[in-house]
Image (cartoon, rainbow, N blue to C red):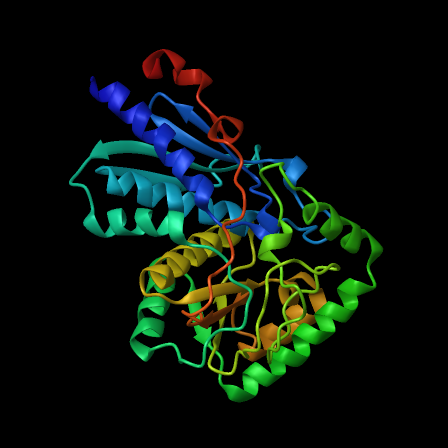
Length: 331
């Protein structure tokens, strides 16, 4: 196989692997275009949450997670790439381009992370009474820092403030008819390859200090009698509040989540508190006004005695990866 064909095959496979990435409401709002010597990441406007995410922050974070998945997949196959973020100001739907690819040694750490991609999932049940090891929190924090963001572990008083803030956000969103309709749509997409099926949503509100999102309908996931008292809560944040920084936040979220998965730590992203401007401002005050909050994470150890929820569905690769420009090389 020629190096050109090796490269286009690697790019197409990395784009397909990136489909495992997490996204808000499992919207998977990305589309990849494989070129002879590059891989482009674009947004899909039809899968943007116009009511929940009018600025496109969560869309960019979701796409950033997919970008980091693709980067890791290429590294696992022995390819080094230069990442151009927001490369064309006149084309805001083009979020990133992986280019200037060159051969290198396959990265064993990246290989392990690729294995974690197919295992990673969101488990909204209460976690066990086992606290997250300090060493694991340190590794997850370093993974975020390596992607250019920061992770602040909240102290007990801040967790209580977060709980009250999450409750306020839930009240505001419950009164927004457009938002509730949007949420109802993405929780009724059975068989579409996107959205949140009943099997991953709690059958009743879990007993947690920090309330999770009210999805407007019960799911079929048994939550059990547990609580989240042993969970740690963290605020992912950075210095800027622009589309390229949201994209990097998604890359940091992905790196943190894959690291957590490798360490046996459950992650649940809490985005409602950053969707409501007033509650997002409260989070910013937790940062003493230095930096901008991107998303909150619950970290915990899942109950090993209870089977976790299934994985959310994924769109087939041919719906998210455009290989038309390299069809001859891949045939």
